Image 1 (cartoon, rainbow, N blue to C red):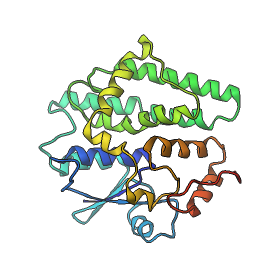
Image 2 (image 1 turned 90 degrees about the vertical axis):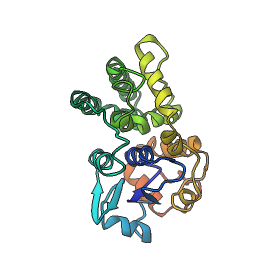
Image 3 (image 1 turned 180 degrees about the vertical axis):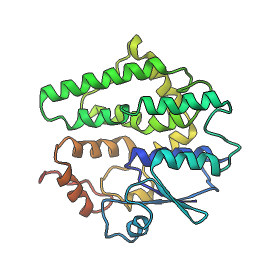
Length: 258
């Protein structure tokens, strides 16, 4: 598979993790090759190749077919790539539970961005409370060690990148997942998911390809995501998109004009 990725995007991170899980050695993939895409800059040759397949990452080409939309894409990856290493339980009822978990808690994915983009104190307070409500529901439905039990599944993959950002970007917005009993299972689940080798690879410091493709200066993953988060806190997403579409790769983005 030729996989169009962007390490900025948690949706692309879903499929990146799924593909890595299919490998016998995730540090030396044999089932896919990865091409890093700056989808904001439409003038780049790599981006133009990508746009023939989709307008947002993740996207891929496999056996002459084109794929996009992370959840559907991951279902295909699970069935078509090394199916012996399944990312869903073998039991039909358990597969149903994994899919229901993804559907029920999809609002968690947008929770962080509401916190970051809230410009007024009341709006931010409302966003924090809504996020905490979503996290408590998520906590209550976790079985552990993973989302629906012993099997690491697409349900875990669906949320891994968003929780990475909830932790890292939350530092920019002064938000933390509480370490109280109400959130005990969430914190344990995060620890278990972040320990997966596939997830650690996607959370590692930026590659040379990333540095040569995307704007933003830090190579360190945590600082990289923080710099991205600061753009969202400006509250002017259209201006942000225009700015980073022309920003040089590997350089800190100048926010002075936003």
